[in-house]
Length: 269
Image 1 (tube, one colour):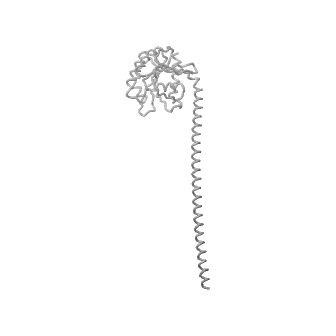
Image 2 (tube, rainbow, N blue to C red):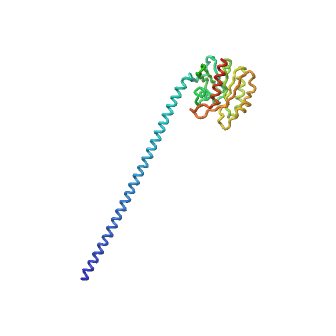
Image 3 (cartoon, one colour):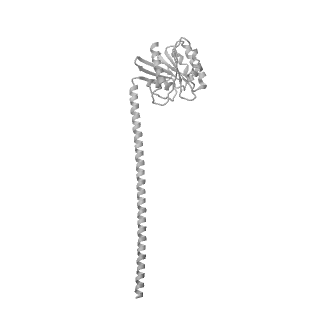
């Protein structure tokens, strides 16, 4: 009788152990399943993040492309608009040109003559990096007719050609780099050589690059170039100018200068 109770008790213990083992296995299985689920969730989240990043990059690229297309389209529109105002733009070697009545654009090399000239022509800021090697002719249509500009390269070998055209010029635009203090005496000497060749030629001075921190104020440029000595019989005007962001509208001072140049040219003609 006692043996039966012992056996029954041992069997109960075995069953309890089995249950514990089964429960342990079940817990491990659940733990494993949980880890698998977490890994799957982590993997899914990673894929979603990657997809969102990819979509964002695609949208960014699409945005860039759309912006580029808009800029191209805008550029084409502006080019079409400017076709009516800009007739020709040429950069020619040093050969004699026909002596038509022209607005001369002169100054030392690096003063910004070409940038100023093209900005006046298009009403939009247009930077030029390469120096003019020879002549640069621009013809602009206005309400009253046509203005023909002639820029001559400002480096030493080209300056001697300037005097050839002074006698037949409508007016002289002289561009000076306001921030290049070292070369102001050279600019002064060149300017006074030019105006001495034609004592009544109207003079418009562009004190250019006024946006630079080191630029002299226009009153300092007036003194540095000795503009008070240009002669009482000559019309003389001084403008502070600059060309900053490429493609932007020209500053109001440059627009005022353009209107004045048109008026002076009309009066001389």
